[in-house]
Length: 280
Ligand code: KIV
Image (spheres, rainbow, N blue to C red):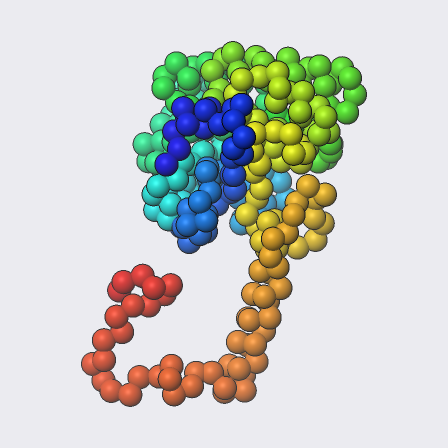
């Protein structure tokens, strides 16, 4: 299993870090079996699991619950939990309490904070000094969607690109062990990657970074509607699941399900296992 040291050691090597989101135990287990380097319990849960139209409503409680489930499914994978909207902008006590809940209750190995405002830099510094590993997140930061006015490619102008680089350096100096860079032109991402000594994990940041992160539901085709350009769909699970449940409805209505093989013949027969294979 990775540690912050082994994640940092990837910098400058030919290895790339593979990271994906998970919010529940079975998905986390799939990712661990696939050899995922890191699992992100992202506040994208708000959109892909809870049905909100942004990450803003997601709470510390929500992400503690998701983190616990992920750690049960992937006990041997390095996990990072997002700090939800506004959490990093509050008092030291609130910041410490959130990190404590993610790491002590949830079992996360690190936290991720979006942005580079003075309050975020202060929170990063407090966390690192207290022994909490922090992953930074720059470029498109979805928690700022109501200020930026939408999900857009960032740092296209020279001034913005310079600020991005300065912010990345500031977060590195404050002690972050890695940086997520979202939706920036690939040549800008390459510059940032070359200029800092911590691994840059890209999402919509092109190939010249130290690793990639995708949202699980996007990558396996479980989200409907608009697909961002940076997403590669490795499967169409949504279509498969939709066909499966339609067939189930038809078979229930036409009495094709359950068949003899799904029915008990004697009283007192032990069920053994039920509901997803869990022992009962
Ligand atoms: O919440 C999330 O899933 C994220 C990724 C998109 C990096 O922050």
